[in-house]
Length: 487
Image 1 (cartoon, rainbow, N blue to C red):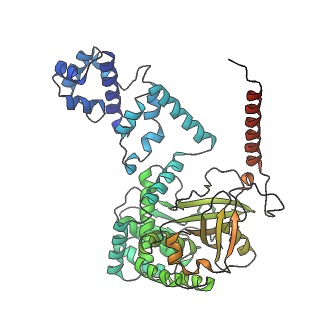
Image 2 (image 1 turned 90 degrees about the horizontal axis):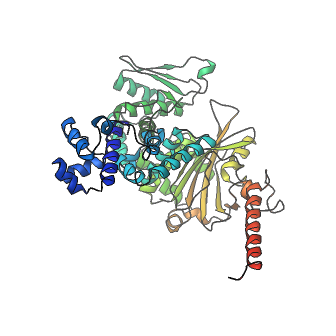
Image 3 (image 1 turned 135 degrees about the horizontal axis):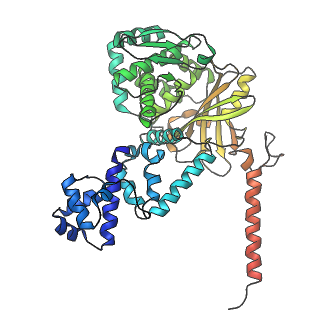
């Protein structure tokens, strides 16, 4: 949007000056000999006239040429400078949602002072919750994925085409050979230094590129990292992170391209049609079988996260299971953090962004981490229902210790909203052996007493505060009615 800034400012100024002079577009057109449509495009920030036309405009509007073309705004419009020049507006991918900078301009210019105040409010909120522009980027990416049901046919086609040329790439050695043939890159190991311990890889571009891998990664993780590098090249994605995970996020294009390359890697390593067929057969069984589910993950040479996330890409499109959600939690020292989420159901699930509260310990995602700590490593299943919602979810979850952070545990969960489609397609949804639980969001918001829930780890402070406000509001209302004076 930065390159559009002069056009947007000029458009606001022309419209402001025209309205102050009480001129219609037709009247200004007659004065300047510029067409009404052209003037309209200028006011919308879509056109920037040549100098000779700007001179005529300035004279007709009664201002100096330099004042008209300056990007400095007067007192009335000045609050918009902060909005238009903010990182949120400059970097946010408006076009991803069919919104142009001009749309923003038209909306904000109706009430510039209020818009400026709104922008400052948003900035204050992001500071208070320690949210950077990257949080907005990732939120935009999630919305983009949900808008497309997390399925991108063009990437699927590119991955299938590449696999057809190379054959199945089941090992990281096969992926390494394919990457070298494609890019000339060497694949080697990262130095065993403290600074690199938590990095999966570093890509060094150049005429002789090199991919440095963390040797501690599992073989299927190495394959995924290499397959993602293939994705960057095949999809022509230049703006990208050079480290995995990224050390910093600079633009939304980087976030989007990293996602596309990762999607390509999953599609390359786990064939869409084979996975769909295998899951259709698995879902046809009357009873939940944890061992069979584990076998499926091994059959596709995938880590739990690779497998679950690939399911979120394939099942909505290929198996008709559209209302699903994906959650990834990490845990260290008995603290739990929601680090990745994708919700394609029609029920809002609790979000973990900047939430300084304690997640309900009844969530399967947290239970499997505790079970894994105790030595139980099998996938688990649960039918969940939130206290304040009638909708049920069939949730499958797996936990593991992180390879690069041995003191940290991770779980991934795929939840299927129990609607008609799920009941028809997952035969074991009514397996009597599946545990059913009613969940809260966080302990701080939960109305259950200690007798009703023995897993509470924090008092219901948010709920108590809300109840106090309700009681106070009711008392004030009763007081007003009792002491109302006759007119």
